[in-house]
Length: 146
Length: 383
Image 1 (cartoon, rainbow over the protein chains, first blue to last red):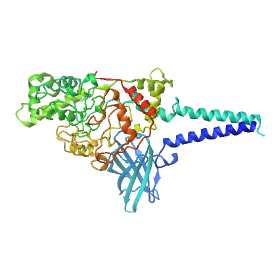
Image 2 (image 1 turned 180 degrees about the vertical axis):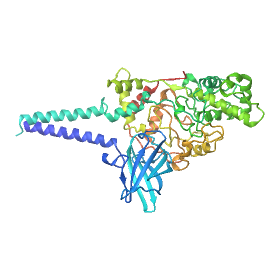
Image 3 (image 1 turned 180 degrees about the horizontal axis):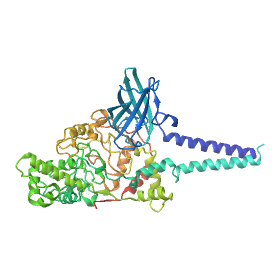
Image 4 (image 1 turned 60 degrees about the vertical axis):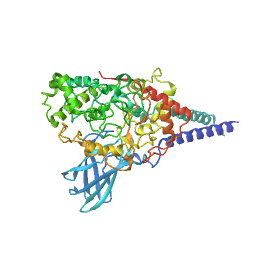
């Protein structure tokens, strides 16, 4: 009798747990969100360069904002003469950035100013930099949680 | 043989897991959900953003003049159409019909005014980039006010000269087109100063969230079980906050949601045409009539082309949405239930590509979502 009760309880627990897990899975969808450690303003390293985002204020939803990016090479030396293009979007929703941000100023010491950045909703955003400099071309992707 | 202790432990574990699950489904909010709710609360709305294109935007005398102009039907060719003909304060500054009716019938649904000062681009297709430039459009539209800038400048000279001069300085001689256009522009800037003051009042939903985020207490007296369940669907399975986020329930962007074409109207390309409209607009942020001094970031970084703009329309606020049938850019859908059925079904778009995917909500969930939307009615005020 006792064994039966234990078996039933184990079964109930298993069903409840898997139900919960299903419910949790249904909340996320599409591409898998990276681990929390993969999120943030950097430093993020590509194959040649390391980039760090330095927003003047914490990133906010729906606001047009300006973000600086600092780029160094493998030896930690600032990359001063890079051409940078910006792309990105929300992998789970299949849409790109709502604006066309671009580098408006090279501030020297490997720091560049990116204007026109907007995130139109909360959630996981990819912010991708294509960096082209004399040492070669590279791509660095940031995962941002808005 | 498991001990009595093990059995007790298993009982406790089962109860805990079942309770945790039912809490997800029923009436507890997770920290992430609380953040979502706080983000939708009117209490988290930021102060009005400045309008650098209009240096009179926050001048109370300009707003008083703008209010008079807004309600004055003499600002029309037939003397019978004012801004308030379509933007009726008693109806939340809209008109309750599928297509706006002024001197004739427009091709679009009248948009409400409250909160529009937070929007970088105006109209369903975003073809204007300031409230004052927006206000000037209908004045010269043959199917709306139907008049000309000459007529309006003349009316200001005859009827509003002291009020005008108090705000804008001496009225120029209306001899040339530049002088006439300057007065016309200032009419728009005064109306915009008034429209900036039209705002949403808190709704039952706001009362519910305010108590939740300030005292941690759940006010069951302001929202029913079904409405709360609807709020959970809104921020969860319904995917509604993908576009309808923030305290105004809009991301201020443009999306193609596969809305059916309006019968008897030519196919409307929405934002795909609107980006060209605003870039070429005589009264945009970069124009000589703007006070922005060429600082026009919204225009500079605007997405100007791409398939996602085809038949994309402005995401409207959902505040007071239940008081605002019919729905969509040409009033194609008559009821809230019809709108929810559309989102649930996610039909193909008549042009471009819909961003929707079928939601597969059941009838009860659709009713709960609709019940939730009805908690967003708080009315508007211009005081």
